[in-house]
Length: 602
Image 1: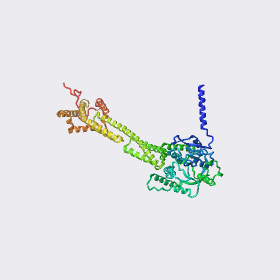
Image 2 (image 1 turned 90 degrees about the vertical axis):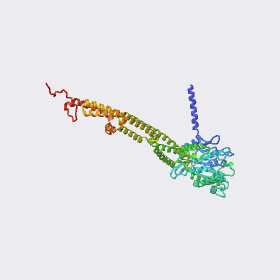
Image 3 (image 1 turned 45 degrees about the horizontal axis):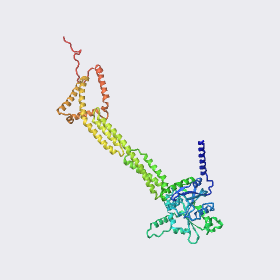
Image 4 (image 1 turned 45 degrees about the vertical axis):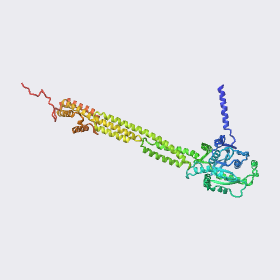
């Protein structure tokens, strides 16, 4: 019973949430899309307005009206949408601002722009310089409207002030960063058309375009004031952006402004009604779908773009073009870093340090070139370039560490192999200086060719020490071992020549060798003195020739060859003498004592 009650409660909660999320059944009204936080320092998204935008599948264009608070922005938007104050955006009559954040009219206007059906949204923004807000908040509102809109209507009462010029610095900086791209390449987003809308009580005198031109002229700065220099730079940039801006004047609709919401078109100033319709046509003629990274946006894509921009603006205390540049360069930076990593991953480590550095420089150059061809921004992109450079260096350090590890691993294996080889050569069954030198040279060559990378120098020093010790130890034992071998060999050949082969010359030669070795060492008290004798050198040369050559390594084949010789001797002793008789070119021992051919005597 308790379980069923909990299920019922959960079902009711889901129904309430579902009904809340689907509660918007009339989009023909204004919705907030951006709201201020309680401190009026940062902005946050509002789900109601976003739902109104997400449902649109056509390309979207946005028209924003910006300007000082209590300057008639909401009323102007209602006029452009042909709505009354009671139907459209809320119009305030008090001293404080009515609109908070950014609002959107839920039903877009459908326009055919160059054959493309476009949904045009109108955005109402919170006025500048109202009481209880920071300049940072106003800057964020203006920055967001600048980035989102296809057309910005800068609504100014009476005239253009110096503060109005300064406020456009963000738009100018965006133009310099994002729109100064090479022709034929996609930009982050196309610039908004700037429409200077000046509402005056009297239209006589200078035209609005003349007022804009005069406002954009340099202010004398004989004292070198930095603030004036900065504003003059903005004037220069706005003059360059002249093709992207339009000036328009609009007279006051009625002298009694507090009653405007209750007046019909017939009660308004005829000149105002005429100019209002011209303004509608002008806006419709300059508006274009919002293009971001080369393509137009539908509702869901527009909301995603809004979220991306809002995150960038809320990151810092003051919104800057640099933060937006970082947002749009983030994906490009990641792709370029991946490109560098893929090029470096093709390397077969270990490599010499110079080779690794050359490949790194080449890959980095190609990566930077690719980033330069794709990145957004000209001035603030330097920070993204620095970030990419830092990330590349981090990846390169990992490759350096991997190269050092692989180099140490390879050189250690080669060093160990050579060390084992030297140990084997120390204990040869038949000592051979030629074989030791051949193995020594082979180890040096293989190590020099195969050991590469940063660890080579360290292991080279270890190799020199190890090989030097091995060679010294081998030379020290070589003559002594050879002497013992020759003594043993002479005695063996005495036995072989006397009892097995019965070759008298072999026995005599063996005795001569044995007597020489023994008497010489006895005469000079040590075997070491023998090693300097020319006869010993001849014996060593003969020994080396017999024991080791490129064709035959007697140390390896001594046992098989000895076994074969024993078999041949046994065979000869058992069968050879009987079949062939004793026909020798050299004298043999005569064993025919008491034979059958001996003459008998009485």
